[in-house]
Length: 119
Image (cartoon, rainbow, N blue to C red; front, side, top):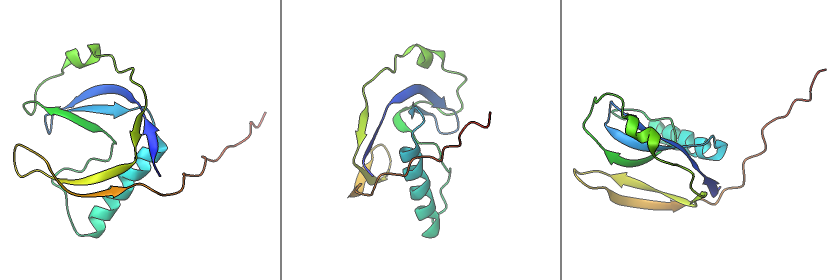
């Protein structure tokens, strides 16, 4: 379903060199990420590097750099970001081309189960 999320923090991923925005916990966004991963695998596509954590790629630095403490100094208190669709992107080198776009139109996720206090 369409949903909103907000940025919790920025991070540097040394294996890819990516600087990413990581969301506060968002079950709907995680479900979308997991469903996309599963669909790719069902098609027989094996990614060079599997990413199972929802994120927004902001930039690429050199790969395998040390910690990037400057990222901790960036304020991430933004308003909610709306997600109402997603795109299949292809990177032929130096840019991303959108191959297709799909709107999100599913029903909201059910609330997580709740267990009453035992005492």
